[in-house]
Amino acid sequence: MAKRDYYEVLGVDRSAGEPDIKKAYRRLAMKHHPDRSPDSEKADVKFKEAKEAYEVLSDAQKRAAYDQFGHAGVDAAAGGAGGFGSTDNFSDMFGDVFGDIFGGGRRGRSNVFRGADLRYSLTLDLEQAVSGETINISVPTQVACTTCDGSGAKSGTSATTCSTCNGVGQVRMQQGFFSVQQACPACRGTGSVIEDPCPDCHGQGRSRKTKTLAVNVPAGVDTGDRIRLSGEGEAGQNGGPPGDLYVEIQARPHPIFERSDADLSCEVPISFATAALGGTVKVPTLKGEVNLTIPKETQSGKVFRLRGKGVKPVRSSSTGDLYCRVDVETPVKLTSKQKELLQAFNESLTSKGDQHRPRTQTWTDSVKRFFDKISL
Image (cartoon, rainbow, N blue to C red):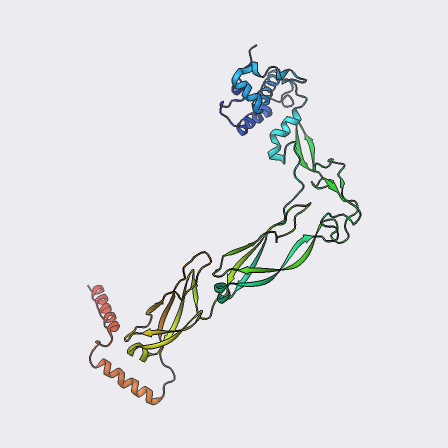
């Protein structure tokens, strides 16, 4: 009887990739395997047919020969011991199909593990973040044991190959009609057994230690920036490379300035006389004091911009600005004489309407329009 097309047997397109082919075969194998239908000869035939199709289409060379010459291109390869019709090696094949689900195929896993990455929060003053600085930090971490050089075995001894898995680190467990590969319970997946462990690290190959590191903080860093110290994380296992240390920057609140990326801002209190008559006040910057000119008739809340007096961020070539918001300060603890003078001054302002108080006039007009509107 003529053989059916392998793609038709598995129900996949000729352009199907390996995952689709594996998925189709797994579905048919589960459905037609003789262990699930022991009394069905038809199921046995369909299972062998699906198995034959999978063995060809899952092999790149056999698939290429089949695509070019059809069954004639692969029949010779099928004549070996067992052929396509044999179910003796079903467990091995099924292990390959389900390997990605149950923890691996026929190949053992690597026993070498990279060390874990670490994170350290470094809090800086604004001045430190802006100018940059080298800061020493203490980091608790896992380092390679110096007594056994990370081997985990007592001095003069060494680890031996695990007899349960023969050094592979995994064992195959038979479950029904398919097998599952899992970590070896004797060596816990390492492939070796330490008979005489190191007394300092108890066979772990690593020990806890606090190490001091110098962190070069670049100028202009800000909250949220990270500095990576390669290889300063936890030590690897079984000769694996160490992880990295990530230093995360946090900036402390400043008593004068607030930072927004490259710009700084601050509040500058000024007297009523300076606001009305104008004058000069000294304003702090990160590089010393500068003079800020206050024009006459300046209102409270006015913002003045000082170019180039901000911050140069770590990822920028330009320096930001400093924004100064003036706040007219109300005098307190007045003497009787001062109160009299202030009262006389206020009366001189109100005697001529609101021409000396433009904001008051604007506010009064807005209130009048509001009440006129709701009274309609």
